[in-house]
Amino acid sequence: MLLDKDVGILQKLPIFSGMDREHLSMIAFSSERLLFRRGEKLMVDGQLGHAAFVVLSGSAEIIEGSGEKRRIHLVGPGAMLGELAMLVEFTFSSTAIASEELEVIELPRELIHRMMQQFPPIAEHFSMRIHGRLSKMVEQLRRFDRPSGAPVAPLEPVMPTHIEKTDIPEEVS
Image 1 (spheres, rainbow, N blue to C red):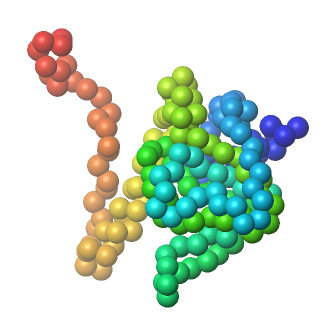
Image 2: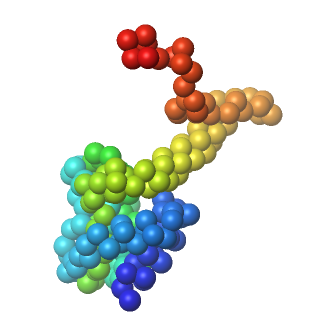
């Protein structure tokens, strides 16, 4: 069944890894499969993105930069393109062009936001994944800022783990 195949592909992507299979099934079922012919563009550098794309079959050229700094590489089945665009307003920083017939799952931001509103565990999952990535990135960046051997301070939580009654303004409590 196509739904099982799509769920299997999504599960392998880091952003979806560990998400409840039922929630993944709802996302896969609600998303749309798109076909692109050779030469058609999925994403354009500088364009505001509305969705992420997961490659099911075929391949796409990813073009980053311009002139001498231009880089081109190929992606195929299992690759995710424009990941941030499914979560937040995001301007694409590369162009993706189908290098042959290309089938993708389109994951529109509107769909993902609706799923997060209706199913809070989905929002929690994405929040945890993004926080984990940011923590790793901060740790890597701090290695450049500290003398060799100096300890690295842990990343502070993004949100408080609890709220004390004293933190709530009087007119609310």
